[in-house]
Image (cartoon, rainbow, N blue to C red; front, top):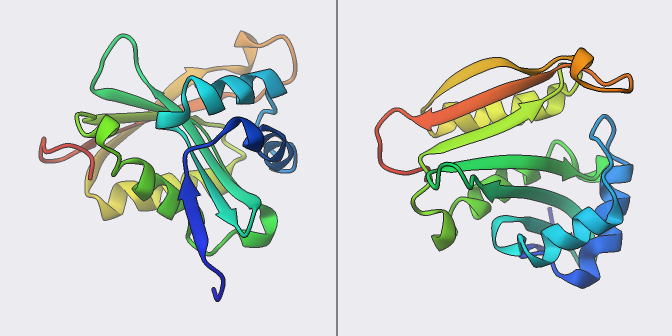
Length: 166
């Protein structure tokens, strides 16, 4: 890739671009613009945007669990269709977990719907490269939702050696 991708904390000015990216990233659930505003302000230290020039081409959102300060939940991960298959999702995760605020994280959780095979591949690659133990279980079934939502699989990843994530 000739052009330089930058990885930054999301800012208020990124909310519209994040919303548009998620809107175009089926099968991800599209949340309200207000939620992306909250993520870009109150949770900006645990989220990341990938930009090419000034365009948002990727986004990862997540948070440190209030119940377990060593657990990080990856909420959403998206890369624009035009830029998929170039390792950007993996680079965003690597950049995110290199942040000081996440240095005590020893466990990663994320949920992925069965039809989202791209996200499954990203997290499989991430777990393999960093030699994580990985467990997959059912987090939610379609019966937990009002609308026609798929089941959600819970991916639980932990380094084989308790040394932190990266």
